[in-house]
Image 1 (spheres, one colour):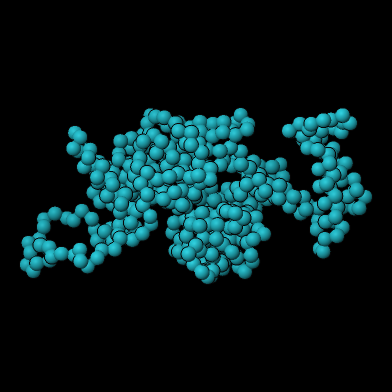
Image 2 (cartoon, helix red, strand yellow):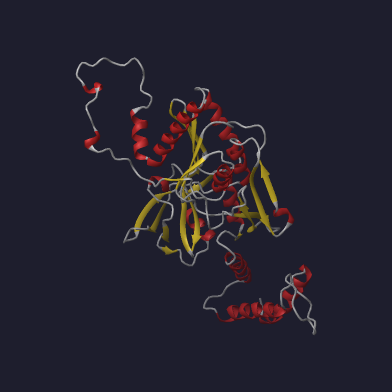
Length: 427
């Protein structure tokens, strides 16, 4: 761009914005500017800043880069989740929604300007390395994350499978930063996993909400019911970063046969939406405990909030993350895109999730159950020559150890059993 073109920039920008209806024509007697208009003085200030960067910045910067940086800054200053997406970033977002990409397997966000792990995805390099929700990423391959946008940080962490990445992590309660080296993999995120904890009691893990998660949850419930009637079910939404809104509604619908699941409110008519449960329900009466923690965000909070407000489940664990905003991904004509916050989520009872999260009905901290020596007493099975039982044990040794390691899961199972005891007494 020549100096003459730079001098004409205020006029060119003003004309463009007038065409779009974003700026008002200069009127001498204009008193109060309309809320939908942009004052020409601000356009001129922007053009002046643009000119000075072009003329005086230590390195030459092309016009396209400057304008894209301006758009990125305009969006990143709105909230941590709005962003301008170039072609690569737009494709990356689509890949993560569809469930396959190259990286280390973490969901990240910005908290107070710091790159923070919302949750590690199950069975990925990040989860196997012990990265935790609320860990702060200070550096990526030696580069500080302080001045990077959220999308720039994500781009740095994604890459070719087999390549290594070094992260410097700040963890609450640790004095020194932790250095972690990870090897990137193809991240194929199977969003639903199920198993039987013991006869009659099922476990359903949803690691994130993808386009087919609702179908997978219904199929998992049907598989568990083939082993016999379910007496209780644990729905594990811990460290679930969210995902597709419609998938969250479908998962809640698997346990609800009527009523509101979630509604949204924004400025435009198409952001005023309500989602309700349908009559066809996979598990309308199965006693249900939902596990959440600080890594449960967005769509996970929608499910927990709906089941809590409809008195359909007991929510157990710790307070959720508190991401209650709706982002729309808007394709642009040049093949790039815009991720823009357009509305807020509300639970059926009208509670906003944003920056508040979901409070569990029963608070249970993460931990491990330690059995003291004094509690171990001599039993029949310890006596030499005891008669063998003809019944199989209800819980395998491996599952018993897992329930000791995962205190929250063990307490969820105990609560389901207690609910069944009370239900039998009421009959």
